[in-house]
Length: 114
Image 1 (cartoon, rainbow, N blue to C red):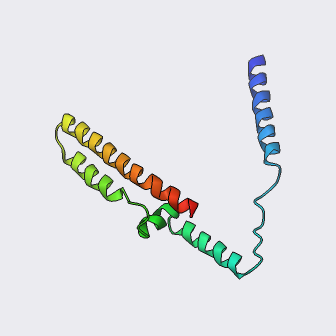
Image 2: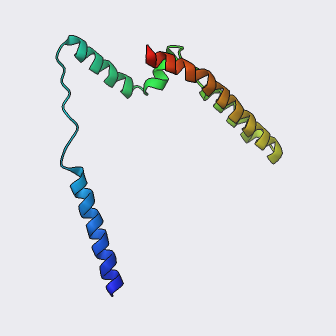
Image 3: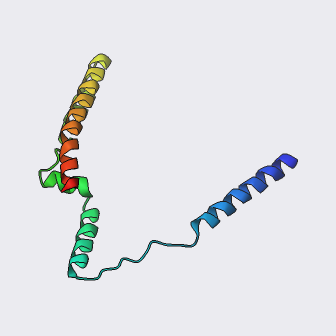
């Protein structure tokens, strides 16, 4: 009985701490002081709604997409009958995705730097 009371008290304390840690605060209201701020904010919201920065950078040709590679290899893996062949294809897929990520990393850093 004591253990149940202790567990219940602990759960209540954790819930209380979580509620207090929220602080009742919300995200600060965005301050748009001029037309440039408004346009930048609207562009950012639109970009986020359409799939995010990575997708935008892929569409602009800054980053290379790995989705076609992944799709191709997933089709080949599902068509493979031998488990050894499936493992080999999975290793190839991982290597190709790693190479795409290595190519994209400096491009992304250059984009962030401006």
